[in-house]
Length: 312
Image (cartoon, rainbow, N blue to C red; front, side, top):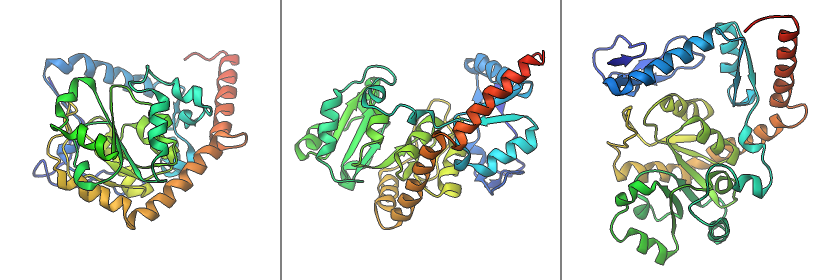
């Protein structure tokens, strides 16, 4: 079974095209579009189609976003879809104390005090945070936290962990990490991310530049939001959509170059824009802010809808 969505009329998989009917010019190629092949994805495609149908027949949609992050697309969605939409995020910044942030998700693979103690030894805006794959970090000579899945430990270069521990340059976390807590620390300076929506939002709430490395799902579109529209990050380079989340085709030099752009003078403007978005995100969640108001409106709309005897 094979599914490609809205294939463009181009002569090759690598020929660029502009996504039509959007508020901004978004350039992609066919290799960056979602594609599902084989019986393995049969059930997934069924769920995907059902979700699309449910959205089209729903009363409205609740978004984990805030209006100031993507105002053109908030308006565009309302105008094109002709349905209600409420932006009530960022929900990740609702938890304000240490215990709430530490308690997010499953149990961490590292003691929170050990992690914070290491971060306290680093200068503000100096630490690179990443949560996948082997990278060109040693050559960059940059302080970093590298989160790696336990089943991917073999991708750690031989001797790398010992060298980084000796230099005090890197903290390697095997398994679950305290991402929200880490990204909120003053020493955190760059977030290397696949650009899943939750990670993108947590990066925004941290107020730092992003290095985008999309591999699947909607990550390529999210990455364009970061680099082309918000201008708070840079791309790792040309990569292809992968249904298996493999990070093939990216060389060490590409990572070094992307990190150099963000930590250098070019990154200062990105950092300033990211900080402004962080403050707007916090304002949106406060009384009178856009997300606070949208949540209030959402509750009132649903109460009114049900009191009128309407059916979903």
